[in-house]
Image (cartoon, rainbow, N blue to C red; front, top):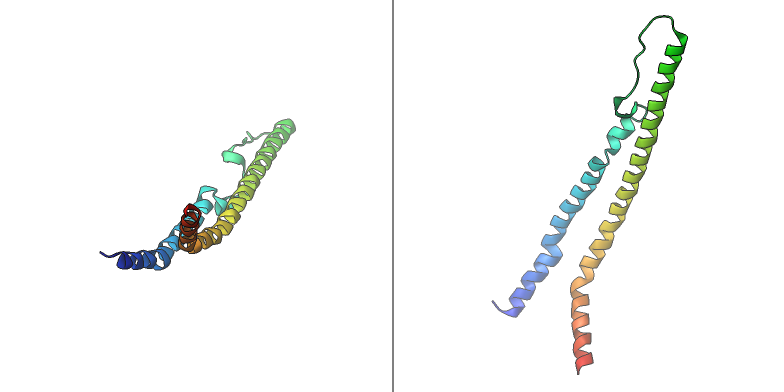
Length: 128
């Protein structure tokens, strides 16, 4: 196989075939981040108790036990809301980083062959 044909095959792969695979990979990474940080389920269950922790009221006419159960359950909901808020914020930040990194990597990939040729030409120029 001659060098010209090999170069054309490389350019075909680099500029056509890889973009399709890169788009699939980018979409899969975006999906993974959303599921890894459980962003949508965390939004849906934002005010739920943390890890389903809580007290059950035993019944009867004991105001201290009733208020104690109420305080523990409210605290568990507060802990759940704080933890889920942190998870949602971190997940959203990572989502934004992935969203910005995709086009940046695409630009680098687009200009990589001309950059390699330019650096090879510069190296040859500096050697001579």
